[in-house]
Image (cartoon, rainbow, N blue to C red; front, top):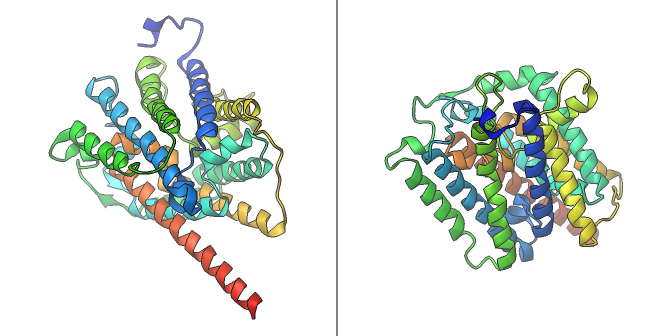
Length: 352
């Protein structure tokens, strides 16, 4: 398919970098404008929670429907994707999801939101991303890799039933049910109609990513991995490419992360939202760095972040992806309550 589009001067990998950069530009620009953030919708301030939840789940609904329409059209298939492994690493998903959820509360944003914030001049977010990328790479291929493989060895055999698509009714029925459930969470969310419209467009970037890498850029003689929006592996890839760019070529992740930062920066500059920000004190710094480490390890163990496992993973109908987002949610709620309890005790002692 790649050759039919006339990309004679580019290899599939080179084209994927440009394609990913375009996806990233759109994600960064829209994400900054609508303040796209899973954490805000789950454990954010009460006055913003419903609106943020409405935006996020509108995005998910369009991502699910768009992805499964592409599957039903025969453009892409997920049979060989890592999310469809018959041996479900339940221990790694559970632990990783809890760690990632706790970490994103400590840093006040998941890694996708922090990548967007980096483009607005937020150096706290930039430092978190660097620590996150180092930790994720160490978990994938470095000193933490033995821990990852040990935890990942604890699996549950699902046989051939690895997704909702394998259940009675098939892919389109379950996609419609998941999309309907997501849309129902947007009811009376209070989100601006313009934000919900942009959220729907943001969701379409997910199937565009899958189709772009798995169909349009497919070349049987020079294959690339089929992938879509994600931030864990791409952050690690960008870090490795930055360090050793003369030895390894840029990949999809490099273009995606770079595009997100630039897209967010353009929007922030246009709207007058660009502002240099840094850490306020030592406790805040330690909290953010702890959260970055938790997200780095957790994102790898869980198989992705709120975007990679959630926004892009759930549209595949994979059980692993849905479990990952579920444990991320539990981890975030637990950490939020833990922090709230600590603040209450501090205020109580201060009053005495």
